[in-house]
Image (tube, rainbow, N blue to C red):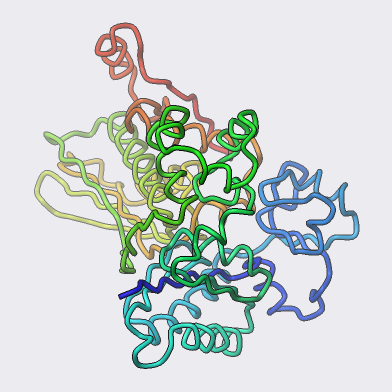
Length: 403
């Protein structure tokens, strides 16, 4: 049986949400993101792209390139609400689907041809989403997730494309290599230096050559270029919260407690970003030496940023821990999780902050979570122990100023 994998992507999602809220924004150049001079562009309408504007660009530069653009700060809660509307429609219609991000979905329609027709079903699903939510959405369909995702990109804006089984390689051949998922800026530049511009060139290369140049990632790129990579769908289940706890031998050491809470919040924030999750609820738990347990919760705008979460955790702890009795346990929980990658936090972030998070997360994923830490999450003794443990090569320690 031929696999039929559907990829759905909401077009310029944040922009489309703003236009749904205010129809006067239709067909006008629109930028969503940080409105200050140090802010960055979270999303931009197609009308602005002819000026060279792209997501992640400094807002100051974007406004210089397109002075007539309307700039909106954006609201993460609103976008999450619209994303949930689309998710519920897909959930009602499709037995197995994956929510890859706040605006991107995969669905396995394999076997439906004998009853209905996969392409016809996908077309009707797309029209249902457009009619019920007012949001434009595109899709691509093929035998695997990778080719379907590329097909969606070629179908945009607000359109659809089907790649028949056996024609994946032919479809991919004339495209630029940067359209293959996992080909980032560095890999793209290296391929260009090798004289590789089109996917067809990779298809004609031996797999061993790509492995020699790029290692395991080269093999993945080669398989994707040939339409052979078939990663499985990760069936969508909403995880509602993540948490962590630390038990002590009864203490009132405020330095130790706050250092521990800072480290816990930092690790949970990294876990959120690694899983493309955002939280809007923080709660603190403390247990006294007599085993009496108390909790306190706070609602916040959706985020996964350390510099927002850590001060909130410490603020909650200060509010909750009033008796100054011996503590046996502290815990941090982040709840009301929604899917969404870190772009949804760009409304308040600066370029420097985004670069910092990108660098920190890259180091953690490659070398381990404890290889880069904030100074606030380590006591002086801990830093000394790390120097000894790493034989003079301590983890990178970041001084952190709460703003």
